[in-house]
Image 1 (cartoon, helix red, strand yellow):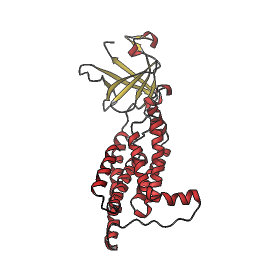
Image 2: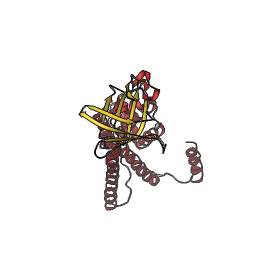
Image 3: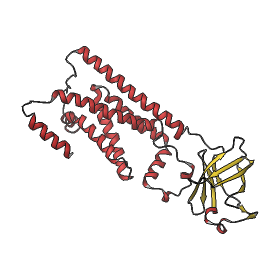
Image 4: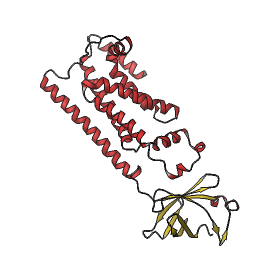
Length: 309
């Protein structure tokens, strides 16, 4: 803001003989329209194709609510309601589409501002780290709405008739302006398709289409035997006070302890589903391999050696 004020003051002083900036304004307005539209497409498509707020992971589902951060609580609640996520994404995409055409820019800016006001409120109250970004998008929408502010006030607040507001055309001939409009729509559709493609690709890797472990599920530990002796969790060392074993992503297994904390390991299941190999963090020497038995679909037995036991 400080730089903008200083630059404006200097520019105005050096160019004080110019009567107006009508030409600069119409091109700058075009730039702002597409700057805002592209961001509405980006954030909207991450919700229409639910990648921004994926479905809660299995370890999240067994985490006490009080242990979640504010941001994790927001991500979990929206991810658990994909229909709401898709709905909000459609609103943002709609705002972006309307911004592509000069005649519908006012409506698109209003929808975009309403959507971003909600996002800004969530970012502030749930302490999400995109506060400035969402505020900037509100400012872009406000810039586009500024010429219409008196007309909007007359229509919504004063119950008065309003006059037409015509934005100056980009070029001097109808043919050139028709070509420019077609180019704007084509470029806008390209942006929409690009963000759709990016999010479809990400959905297949990290979203709802991500692969699952062959042992997918939340398994309750009914019996734990160490060195041939059945042991209640309370008698074990901290790392083996297991309450649950969680298989979600193919390359990870999580042991939930009795105090609800987690021990996370890298994991791989052999193609025959007969062995489970574990790794720990960045350690190249630590490993454990369990034999897998499945007496029934809802029962799982893991046997072998871990940490010398």
